[in-house]
Image 1 (cartoon, rainbow, N blue to C red):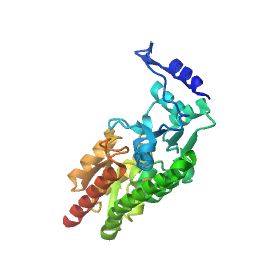
Image 2: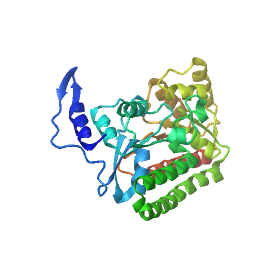
Image 3: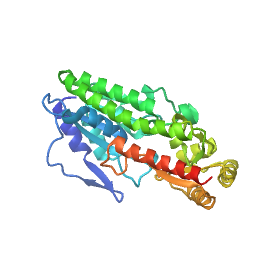
Image 4: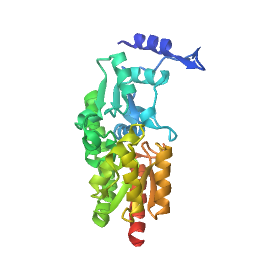
Length: 315
């Protein structure tokens, strides 16, 4: 598409449904020119954890829009709006999580069908598929250091391909980000070194990758975790099994997803508290949204370390 066509799309698409009525939105200016060689590369990340990383890589050479950022929203249930469609249509580089996590973004990309866009599908990159079960089909790849490192490397390559004249700049940012991520994952290594084998539980599958990386013994029923992650009611047998685990005295920490709160996860949190199981909350997206990926994840690692340590001291 050329620049003028993009403007037409933006103006036509700028209507939203309010209370069942289509309300026209007045656009005072055309969208940014994606073909301007002197302007920033327009990047859209479907989620802010990928957005933070590409922002650090691109620096002053990118303008990044992260779509899913709301701490009160379950990202699995996000519904795209007109602004999202315009942003993706105008972007030169789009990053989606894939694995069924942000199908709305894939649908917008398919509808736009822009041949000149660079699209990074993190699930495809890491060979994670919706058919893979709780590990190889788990969409929460930003909790796996190996997947993050591979994704960052691909982001770097894509930025270089879009703007090769700034290769040296991107290289410097890539090196700095690798140092920062190395320091972050040293925290995870400390958890493994001190607490490998400790029994822990989680209300959903978001914690599976990190539990595996740190060699923690994640005992909560996979059927329970998968159902909650998908917005379904867990099988009764898995609920009973989970309750028994939390009441056994063996589980030291319950990891609780603050963005997928349901009556059954709230009940598990209550049972854990009643049985001296330390409960910590984690989130799917960066919270607070102005944190970097490393600051957010590092705070969660520290909370996990302290919770495991409290469980050990309570033995």
